[in-house]
Structures are given as structure tokens and as C-alpha cells.
Length: 163
Image (tube, rainbow, N blue to C red; front, side, top):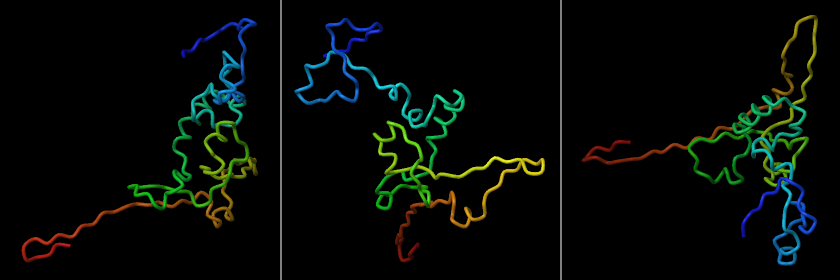
């Protein structure tokens, strides 16, 4: 079974089905001949995790796609049992306020990779300042664990023991 790409609307005898409605059960196999790709699948995986990409400038989406790979959340659900050399995990993870369809497929709400920060942009006395609230620091905002594994060995050489 191959693929046929159409750039024009298909002839009336061909039936199209939406991506979400197509099932792999035998009852649906002979129902459609063509399938429409969902618009969320047009972007790469990192770019499809950006909420409202059409409201951002294109360089901002590209920057987020590159920086989204460096997020620090929970990289695996069994991180306490894994023997990774180094792993960083955020203290308090929060679910994102807005999700995309791809986030639902990847269970991004169950394994979030960040925190929701409340930001105010103000001009105070003519000086533009960037400030972080002390209560956020006291509540360990943006703090993380760093797990490192070390290996130690003990050998006996001759009559002396090297530890």
C-alpha cells in the first residue's frame, strides 16, 4: 500500500477522512482513500509544543524550538531508579497554563518541564528594572536537584591495600 499526494481537491469519487477520525480497525479500512494531515503536524516536535506559534515572530519560534530542548523538568518517570551519570530535575514542576494537541499526545501535562512565573513589566521612576520577588526565592522558585553517580573501587595489591 503506497501513498498518493494530491495538491488539488480530490475527485468526488474519492473519500477523505480527517486525521482524528481514522481508526485502524477493520471497519474503517475501506471507508477512506485519502487522509488530511492535522495542522499541528506541520511543525517539528519541539515547535509543535509552542502554544500559539502564529502569534509570535518566526525568529522567536525558532529560538524557542532550540531552547525547548534544554528544559529542566523530569526526564523520566523512573529517575530515582535510573543510573544516569548526571541528571538535573526541577524542584516544583507546574503544569502549563495552555496546551497544544501535541502536548496531549506526549503526556506533557503529566510530565511537565517548567514553572509558571508571574511577570510584571513596569517603568518605575524612569528606571527599567528586572526584579525577582523574594517570596519566590523563599519558595524555591527555579531551584533544581542535581544527581551525580560516582564509582569507587577497592583493590588489594600485594600485602598493601589501596583504598
